[in-house]
Image (tube, rainbow, N blue to C red; front, side, top):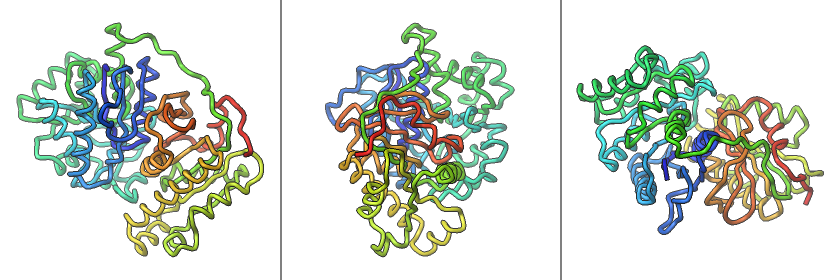
Length: 427
């Protein structure tokens, strides 16, 4: 195993798998902390997908270290801690505490923080994270229901989360190439800084960063960092040239979109799907809490829809509606109701012949994949930057597109199915 990765949510793990497989690495996604005796060593890259982004920091540390130990025991030559390109976290964690714990586990006293993914509009300038042309703190991420991001300065954010000194290397150094960046690493380390935030404005910067980190035992960042890291193995002749897959064979069965994200991108995708005539039903969180809307009833609605086209089940609400729900039920309780309901719906639909799932939202994806009893996934063609189709390689034969809430173009839900081979069926 050339590289082993611990990802803090399932959609981020899938995004990373796509980046690695596109670079030519045979990549497998494993869901949850690997079980004792799990066979992990046959792939070039193994990405362990956890649901640790929004849980208590101590639990995230324990879970991440368990996953990392399994990867290292299986022979991983380099460890990557993958988190969201919008640095979703709180002042208590979980990015900083997990990074510190993995540094101790790998025996290193220096690493980087590089969440950037320029292809998706995530860049870092002078240590400040941008979403498109907006500072993170001005973007819709400031209204995230679990991890509202109100500070774009990643040096400050990590400084509040960790007990170590945080440094910054800006774009002018990175523009000088890998040797200059390695020298800057040495200078930061000599100055007592243990984690350095890296400016990243374009994919070319990620190539420089990856080259400079070739011998680093632990790297932390978003999926974009895989661009450069994977190139190290390609240049060393350890992997073959990449071969893009245009389509993926899908099992016969019906199709469903389950949207739990309240992001601007997902809300736009829901609107586009509804305007195109996709049958849709909205979750009413207060009705679910009172028991007047149930997973069984929602699954029955999906089964009653005519034809084999996708159906859409969504909970996404605009910030004003979301604020009312949080005030009435509580932020975490309302989120848990959405996740458990959509997961229960997914399980019921799988049992009734649904085999093709698009899931929007990291927390929702984690809950749905667990309900579907999926443990390992192979990576298929890319739908939009950061979002591929995947296929289960254990248990039931299913195809899944697990989408971070903020990813994908407006027509994502409408065009994804064109990349699958095999007819959609009405069962």
